[in-house]
Image (cartoon, rainbow, N blue to C red; front, side):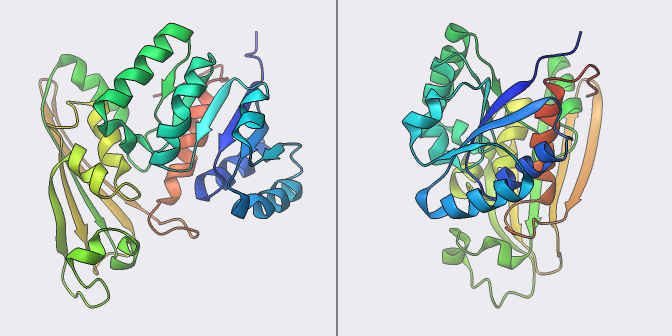
Length: 276
């Protein structure tokens, strides 16, 4: 028997949101319907035009009350950490599942604990896609046996760091050699660069936690892509992975793969066969 159609509520209509809408319109996001989208007033016209061009009959609103009143099964956050803080609890309290792209918000242990408790109380699930990373399935499997060390090194071209705290650390427009912007825990990295290294938080939650996962962050003029190098060592062996992802044409801080990771996670919820 086929899984029933999944009704989605999407918060945000930037790079990830547009990619998801296109996938739903193209029939590659599984048995899904984009029921409603919550956007800022400044993004309303863009969302209306795009969804109309895609032929999606989606209710678009700038009013959170109207958004949550519409029947949906899954709320998708695609608008940043602040949105998680504002709306995640409400989504889970209503018994819906919640997919969070800005996993860096979960560096707040109190918030994360509250959301997990709400999910358990109301029968929802808290979902985190793998984003721009590879190997999350292997890491989470190895973590069951025991993982001793996990490191992620992120390298992005200098222009990808404009609009972040990196601008206060170095003159991004003039560097000619790789510059280490940060080295420390995944918790600190995700807090310092919330738009660039949510991947460190996702990796940490899949493995040995935010404080034991080491993150290194570089502005690197020698790369034109967003590069993530992951190494881990555990009871089952060692893994070394390098992902050289093309940046999104709309936002160089986000890898093009991120939206497809969200699409794949949603597609799996109604799929008859799930791999990984």
